[in-house]
Image (cartoon, rainbow, N blue to C red; front, side, top):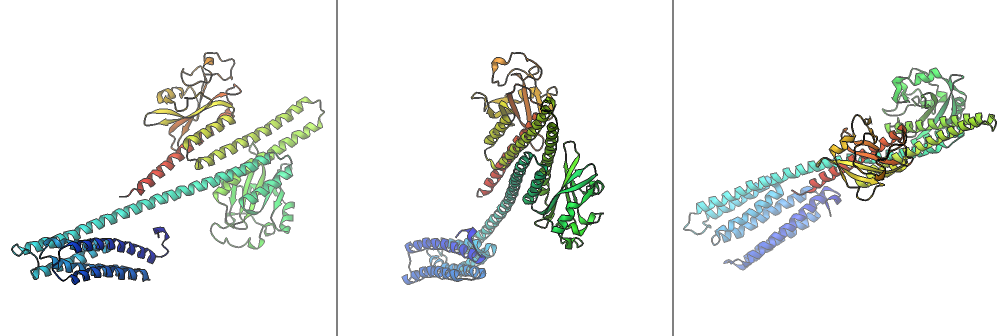
Length: 611
């Protein structure tokens, strides 16, 4: 039975006492062997009786412990056995004193056992009994030889007994304090580990949810029918985020009102009323007042703070509209949660209003954030449908010879494809974010981040360097597209900082070093092109350099990401640059996550080292 398998305190006490009895049996066995070998001038039956009593006491104690039903019974069994062992041991000590004056040292063994069992009280009790035995021996002149000062021997023996009591007390106290300190430290480490585990699980769940939301949004971007798109949007919101009802309102500029386009989950009467209802812009703006804003374009108006009337007939459960909130954090029937759907120009084109959470509570921050992300992507899908539908309608009204309109339609399709490409890139970023908390190998994670960045944005090569503070150098931990030997190479901090100057800084998170400012050195895929001139502005030169700093959470520079050799041979656009900056942030997260896991693993290892 192990410590973690104890079902009751009685089982634990029985296991501990059984361990003590096993140790006692070993001690008694050794003592019996010595006792049998020592000379004995008394009747042999007395020696046999003492040995039998020793073993009999252990058998009786073991039987009693096995049948005990309370912790107190087990504790008293140990105390009685300790007292009996001390008394029985006193008999051969008294008998051997005339021939072996040093035999009194055997009484130090029960002193030690008393300290282990009952700490200071046990050691004092056994020490007192040992002192009485020595005083009896002195009173009956059992201490030999008779020609030596027996009082001095007595004082020495008693002093040693009580010095042993004090030593046992200090030893037990030190062990106790050490155990308490180790227990406290282990509890702190376990608490920190559990907190980190909770954060990791929450992060992984959040990343999984975001990936699912993004995949759904990408599929919405392919939808070309507005009614079907709105139906899917509301269904996804209710099913993925746990709502029993909801609606989507579309803005009509001509009437300056919002029309209920899609309604789900409400009772039949409320459903019919909502489908006929129009919400004036003024009333909607009242509900989307800045005092109700909990996120950009997200508004939550609790029933207690509302200044408008809520009609029970259009609610999910009309009977609870005028009742008080059941508990703090509980959803009230009159609560309003609105996600504004905005176009790329910031104009509100619709409202997403989920209602009646399935668990009956106000949605958590994570849920609100996820819906807000989905709403932004869904708004882009709605705008995409509007653009495609409008342009397609215009194109159909013109003749086939109108090449200009066909070009416009192609541009719209290209814009829609670009939006889908952006969504796909976001999926890759979210996948890398989730992988950071699962991957244990930092080098493998950096390779993965670099490969996705290079493949996604059309580079033929790239490197990631991390700063080694002990040697003040930058080490290439990941390299793609270069000859063997580039990965693992080192660059001094001075050489790295030569290229990261105010003249080359575009933003705090991006440096572009054109060949005109770049010093010689570094690595190149095509060294024979280094001396060639740039053909025309905007073309990529072999000696151009892109540097994306990698910062930790404290803002300190810990490395750089450097993609190289664009396949289209053009300097990347600002839109591409801004997305690559995200990969540099992911690399920083990967490094910090790896260091945090290493620190926790080191703390736990140190706490497990025995004292």
